[in-house]
Length: 317
View 1 (cartoon, rainbow, N blue to C red):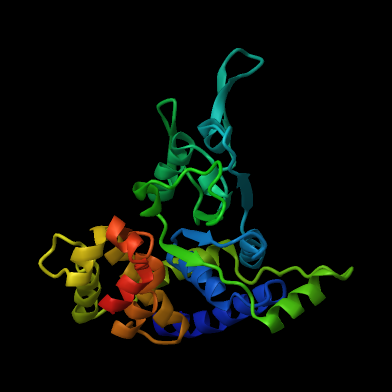
View 2: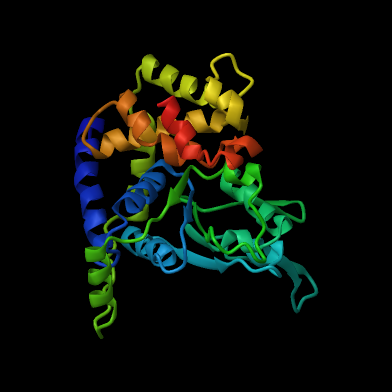
């Protein structure tokens, strides 16, 4: 199959995926879009929302629709790195054997990731970037595709640990889930208070997902689109020559090169699922907020004057 035909096929498959997920998840269309875009780019997503917005159900449903191996890790204050990665145990022959942890799966749901201390959060760093883990000097490759979909509750601050910048930077998207509309909430209540339980069927195979991830990387991009993405990220850095007055006034730290890479990958994906064979500047703008919002650190002036990261990004766009 040619790359052009593969992109035409991807448009249909992407719609089928959204239809299957829509059987279970009502509303949250933008969040579903971003999660699926991160999957076809091979990136990770952080879902932020108050309790009851179906964050965990969304991740469950996506894994069902993708037909991938799925493990859930409930992050708690007493969780240890070995509870995620696995550990070496002494077997009956008095030899050490490695017992794999839940990280050895295609989709990891890191539920309430900010409830565990930084020592345990750091256990995910190598896995998220290198797709491998190192334990007792032994290197283990993770099976591809490997995706971390983490959830975070923004309003409960008791017993939470903010995610370090290095960890945040490894998430391709930061996705804010909003309250449903009145009509959507009516539909949610109708569909979840009966004896019938909806479930998404698998639409793609593991090989198809890996092929799509390769296809996205092969999508051509013109130099002016790449230069726009790099320039946009450069403008978020208060010490750069391109920084605007607003950034210099309200930002402590801007986004790093990973943001530029993710903007281009995301633009390729969003163009491909629309049936376009190459992304343009509008595609970069369409995914700028979820890619940049968790990579920009505001200063105390921004907090005092109630300036949000979204306001800063919109000013740059």
